[in-house]
Length: 210
Ligand SMILES: Cc1cc2nc3c(=O)[nH]c(=O)nc-3n(C[C@H](O)[C@H](O)[C@H](O)COP(=O)(O)O)c2cc1C
Image (cartoon, rainbow, N blue to C red):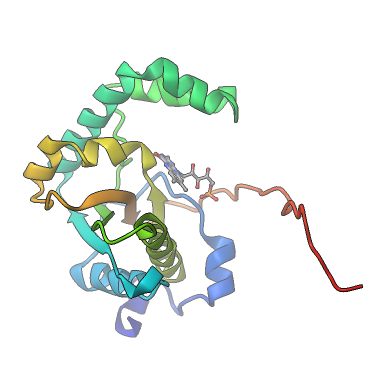
């Protein structure tokens, strides 16, 4: 990975700096992430822990804006049909977020992948009960590695159903036994992303010996 660091960052961040500076990036510069960097990110992804050493992950890389727009339109179409359900889903968290999402879905110009030029979708082969856990661990590795290199990422959970549709699978040549779990857009951030504060960890139980 080392030889690609200088493209985006003078020096890679430490693991803790990468953890604390990673933010979901929703505005990207037009430059495309080069193949070596994509491969370096995948290499970081597969270092994640994997249950029973199954390594169930399979990666789909999309660097074609027209394809991303087609998948986005497919996703927007299916979400629009379930708009009420989706509003309820977000309503428990934040009504403003729910309304903003519904409005963006309705806008023909909105792309679910924002203006990112690269999508890396992590899929799972059916190799046991923990394959989705493995994929999410790989996803976080990938996002932290990107963050360490000065690249931005954003999980696009709302694209999961569209990526698993038969149309998308045949268009992108995704094998039928691969289920897309974690779609992540990657790119050079257009600017700094605002920190999203977290609540303090809720420790509901901590047992110590008396
Ligand atoms: C499983 C999952 C799905 C997500 N799906 C989307 C999405 O579809 N669109 C989006 O803009 N952000 C999506 N996000 C990003 C979250 O909104 C974001 O992580 C959260 O607001 C916290 O902000 P931060 O990542 O900048 O700390 C998703 C995150 C996760 C973990």
